[in-house]
Length: 320
Image (cartoon, rainbow, N blue to C red; front, top):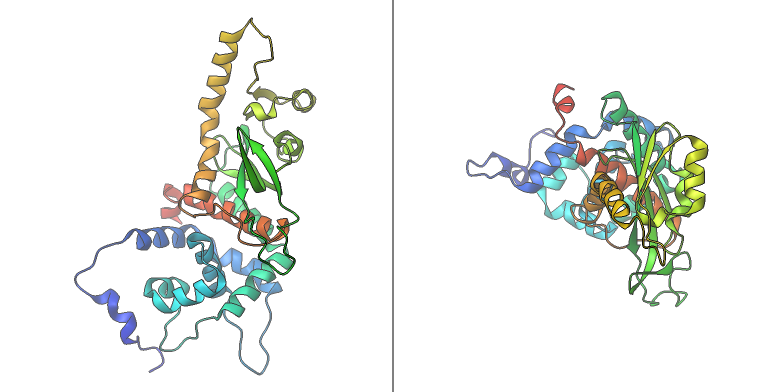
């Protein structure tokens, strides 16, 4: 009788049903995430069971970890959601009639395992490999950009201090406290490289580590308009498509400057799509942990999932 569905799981057999947005989203992501390859990647680092209680299956914990990223759930909230929402249990492969729901400590330990073994970067690289194998990544050019991620500023913690690895910066006339996510994308907006720094690090200082060297042209906004950036691109033989600033007192060539910047902005707009997915569908607008390492690991995972989200309706997934 262990394989019999419980009453709670029979809700999906109702005749009156509507395909909700959450069901549609989870079905699409379930189809595009390379579960088998990611499980094989994490498996060698995952604890093996002895004679006592066996650990949760790797794929189940990975699915729960991804649910956390998609719905911005903390560890206790994720445990509660698995008990309360049958659809999330179904996605994670949990039947309350025969399976245990991982508690918040197990969910925390799995996340710490990914951070300790630097598996977030490995997951990102594996997703990139899958996209390249399916011909979904364009290599002709790169677009670089950065976005600010707020960090909590209250000091109601053990040290009575704000996160020492976060910093404040001024953008326009407003001050921000937190970190900065730097990303290099292909011409269609798929993220190929990620760097995480404190918010006060200028965008152009991270540029050297973002391009791979295979691109023929690089597009960026005016935040990268520095002599060192132009010299680096010329040295690497990359076409320079960095938007230019208007210099103080400049009176000639303004129309040509506006036309050039407008053409760069029109092409570079697709590079913002991954940031939109990060902050809108995935709800990642504030840091959730302390320190750049933990937040950077989560951000790297989120960008890998954002790439799959942006390409989830490509025909190649239907043929797989």
